Length: 171
Image (cartoon, rainbow, N blue to C red; front, top):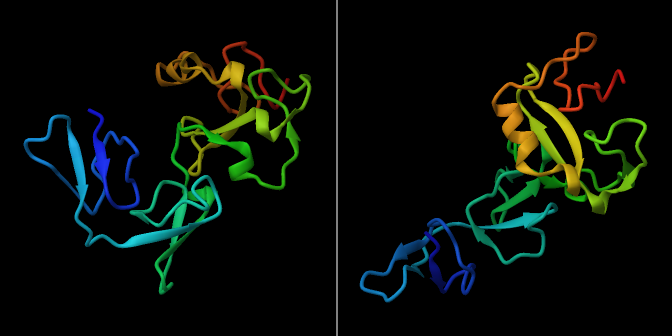
């Protein structure tokens, strides 16, 4: 359910959940959230939310800075969620070009504006396996395949191979 938001940092932005500092407005014509305050507002540095007004709560990919005044959180890609796409330029700002993991090592490098990064948890590594995707290979079909365990691990390095059956690292 999408809510109309009135007041606070999300004023006018439709939301599909209730962030801290908002309460439901009973009897409204459409589902509405009203800012009532009382929530800590976090200033976010770096990453996809830099420059936004202070937010009630810290989104995925941000790390709280203890003792900061005002409360501040910094972008830290190690805090990013598994199985969720992030623009490469937000995770690796110094990277200029990279190949798509699904297109393969021999494909042309793409600029970071054209790529997304996903941290897959199904590789047996504690911190996951980072894979880069072009827009054409980002659709849910690859993710569903990973969830259904239809991809096989590479016999040489153990990482999950794309649906093409050719390992991104070993070729």
